[in-house]
Length: 253
Length: 263
Image (cartoon, rainbow over all chains, first blue to last red; front, top):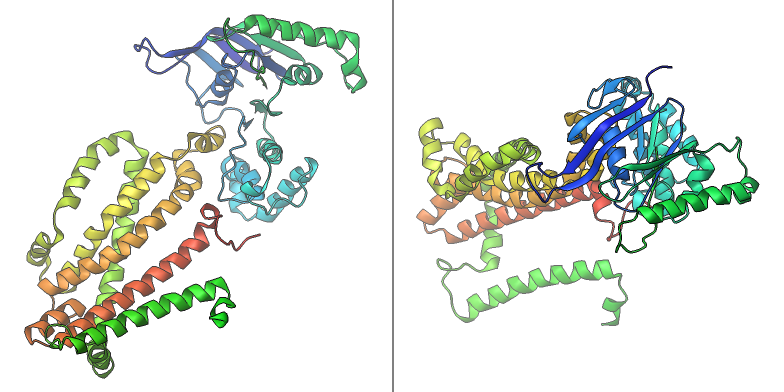
């Protein structure tokens, strides 16, 4: 077996300076490895460090200690894997049209970057429109971000995360505010990791063995409901005492 | 009154501001006549406009000189301001180091700087260009630096996760995000550039509206002095309008409250 595609080894992340006693410990000695081609969902109570893990893998944060390796390269290496990331907030650039927003990765990421310069612009615009059409946003390419609803923006931001054919897709709360997500995760993912309240640790690592393709009927089968219920109970236990029973906010990696 | 209310709101607004200007001149004219103000103290608008039309060929070279100097100083000042502002806005260290120097420098009255420029470069166009450049640089620096420093980290993350270089982020996120700030500062910088030019021209120049006004006031030709002021005001308004039009073209996304070209 090759090296796993993503390796977090003993990663700790502290927001703020390490000598500051008030620094928030977001993630405590987390070890996680994910194989190429896998679909993993991270679930857990709000504020448990799920977004932090995603940012570490995406290279937006540097671990306070421990190592993050993606595709055999330390994070921060410019030759690392192509990553697509869709955020909790759609974060569209307000001065660009939806189409130009979706095309942004092609302007930045090689090998598309060079081709973009060589006037492949219209071909890329077609590709962006095709992706938008696939998520039901046909004809919205020329609109500005503020002319779309929150859900539409989220779909457009999915297109932006996919247009450069990423080897790794990171989705941070991809489906909006959801108590639903546990269900969605069980329906979509191969593997679900339940995280504890802050500082986050992985409490449980569970394979989802339902055969594919999965259909809607399957999501009403008793064993599916049992899995969802077990997960929700686990998340409820993980929630720090005294914390309001907020909707569990999750993401998939 | 009915005729006025039936006009479109926009046109009515225009008409009213034009009427206000005309009313101001009429009031001025009447006050001068009523209180028998000598034209050496305060010339009547009619006198000023007469001078404007009769001496236009004489004033034209001065006006173009001032316009040229101002635009050159403004362009250089904006360029320098954007560069300095970009460096300061991107780097915490540069911000801390350079800010006190900038504030100190901008607190110096620019009248005091003109003689130094004259010593270095001799009287003429160069000191005027430099004065207008240094006077209009500061607001641009501050606005660019503020705009860059306040760029939402989430917007930068969009590019960072793609492995974008710092220059990519500046070009694709930082600068577009800063454009509204830049245009706000350009309007201030533009009027300041005129101040700088005329200031230097009144001190050390042999051409330009400032120089012409100095000579005219030496000759007690007060209507000509006022004619010079009018020309300056007109050029200032014209350039302001031009910059506002360019602003709407480039930063429409930030002004969506108003009427917008794109639908």
